[in-house]
Image (cartoon, rainbow, N blue to C red; front, top):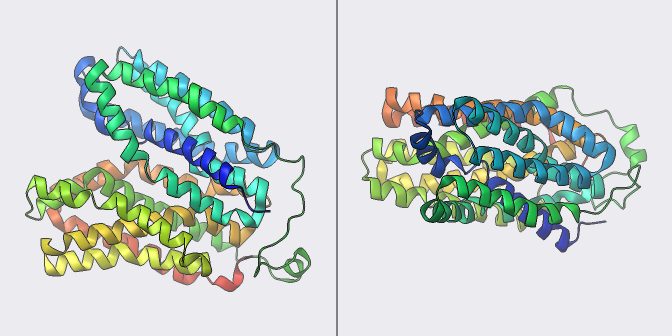
Length: 392
């Protein structure tokens, strides 16, 4: 049974709230937070990085809980944890309380972002969850579009502490009811009608299991692409300026990434869903290196092409993070396996802004060669996998 449009809208809205109030929060609040606390801005970013490391460790535990109990109790609890963490952040008085508040937010992130929502959908709908996963990422793709203006407005009108409290209140008033409305999962996953092209359990039993290296390959692919995505999110304007563009031009080109991500997800929801998810993931992984080569060969005139290709590829790869583990290993134990596969991505994400910033300082626009090579290695890893070894 396919997921209902209502469920996709509810989970997608809850995910938009979760990403907007955590992942995208430091971009606007790190400086005023550091200024009032008398700390260097880097200390705020280090606390955020530590939160991502905490989330990496908790991902498999949260996934296992969703496999066992369903998404409703886990996601509902994370709404409360998000609210408590943001409320604690609003009361921060120094480096220790700052680290503790971000640590609590990290616990919520490990149990309440994309991987948890994907696992909740797979627990309910099995193989039929692919379209719902796409729908959720499509909605949550607007997290920065919604979150940055709202955070900026609350900070300008009331200060950063009240901005954190405002997001905490939204988690209780909006996020909690939305996550609590997720249908209860049956005690054991019920047999489901399989979509066209997905083999029956009897047929799967006669097939060899997916290659043991598949999980390791997917873990590497997602870690490499998330490193590039996070590095670009933090430093693309700086990279554009280093290549010779003005700051205004860099901001204008950087603004193309968000709409391109949404366009990529729409493409996946439309034409690309007819393809095997592995094929669409390969196309997406090729987008960043192709754009980078165009930029490096043609110069800043090709920067808009790079921004569009990078954004579209990143949008599709976000969906692949949910669908590829499903088609390779099936819905059984999806949540815990997804947590383990995605754990290296959270670690890579935590260090990406620092490492990529250092590369730009050392090599300028030449740092783009590093990100292109890393994305190309992810494409090579995806080419190593075979669609015939997947269970879907």
